[in-house]
Image (cartoon, rainbow, N blue to C red):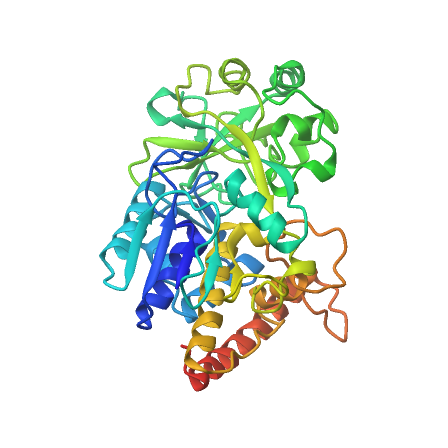
Length: 442
């Protein structure tokens, strides 16, 4: 069994198959071949945010985590082991998380870990899983385009900067999670006045960018819009999105700030913080200049600057079936695509796509029939959307309630509707786990 890419999807797929007695060759090009955003050589390195999103059961992200746990995900277990406080979200110490996954992979006797760039997947195995992620090498991307008969699609993705905790002014910043003014929160908040916000936005819009173009909406994945592109849509756009002050009370004034930047801990030692939602395309000097205009960050030291990079994915509705297998290929063995390369956007989505692809491969190898994943599950809804040949203008997608099967009778109250989705999904998950066990793949 050949798996290309030791990111989130590839590492999960390798561990799932290896734990079932399958001999796996896991290929990873780092550190021999570097990328624009990776800093190390460990498996499952998180290059953007360190947050795996909400743990709330009545959310699509929370549903997905429950599905991962119920289906025996190795990586979600490692994420809990590496957890740092982030309110209702599952955020991790990225170094601890990656190191934990790397130990599992390299210590497993059924995994042969091979460092080196793969320009064309070797077919000397029973199946191949491509899980090379959004930074698939040019050579392999060219092979995929030739093999599938379809050009790769690409959009620009961005990562937020990280600042050192001891360089922040905690006489200005206040610790609070939204709507939790009476408790010590998990986020640091930088409060803007109207005047400081206006000055900041003015300079943000004038700042020099690395990629010197005004991006159209379809160039950028919506969840990773650079902060300057959001501001370009309107002076107050950040204040109603990334910088919204709703649910916050500045203890220095007793009032809600005009706008606020939230900072989330990057590690369990609380020595570094991520600027939440501040993905950016600004040059490094401009990031220093402009982001130091944020109250409390006047002397900020940057542990990592924000970066912008190419994100490559295939048009899954045209190419992949419901098992993430390429429908038509000259590859002599089954070829599956998992992770962000398939357009299932998001950390947990990548983990689940690796897990699911591995179970599908194992079902084939063992002569079992893989039960279809119910659309009432969070990942089942995403899978149905991503592999539906009627899906038009395909773009990378997170799990969300917007792609789930609606109820026959509309539930107008949003909280009640979300709770109903979660309850229905939990029932579907329990039944699906039973089906997987009966099929002998779980």
